[in-house]
Length: 290
Image 1 (cartoon, helix red, strand yellow):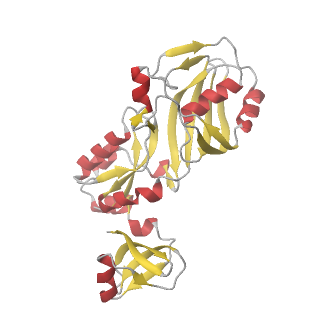
Image 2: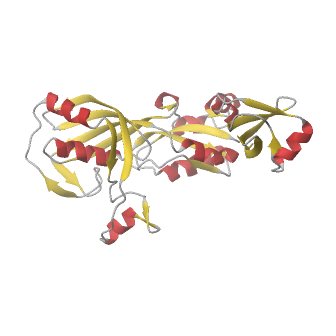
Image 3: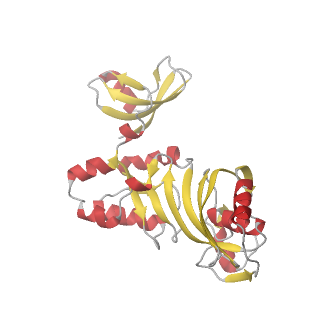
């Protein structure tokens, strides 16, 4: 079974948990995901099936959209509700205009220091492993971009806000929430996170495990909800190969094609989809085949 299925990740599951459960339900031997989503987060998680696991290199760079909630007055060591309180503040946020002004200031390109409780590796070791051992380590600064940052709700009494964030790959929403609180003169942590969009994959198209389990033997359902590589890359130009060239292509032989450099959908002469090929300097080479 080759393709991509969009899972609505439930709270408490790691991204790898989602992959494992999807494999089990679909009785699939090989699967992967396109980027980690924290266990406390919910929402869109594309799961790659079969040979489509090789597509991860084309999908991990995509922009994302989240809905997050910031709780003011407390700072957690993990940046989310799962951590221990390490700082408190009595400062109250009173004015919605102040929040809007701060949110606007975060729009654009900027640098961000990821949280210590993250899976980023430094010297071959994950940051959260250093944190758990109490070892200080220099965290690498990342360049990110915030495209959109909207205020969805401000609960003055409970001192929390709900925001919608559209951002580049590598943006840590936990850190963003802390920075927003800091710029408002207080402290805060991310109390809720839901990913609603990953590139073209949207939450309304995501499937929960219960629905997947109920329809695991329903071929019409699977055909509708498992996105084939051919459809995912339907915007690419096509190259048709005769039988001889197809055999050479599948065996890794580079073929001469006077075409612009780029990625192409490859088809056999009888219009059967083969996979993806890359043209560079007028040579076509095999990339991913199904």
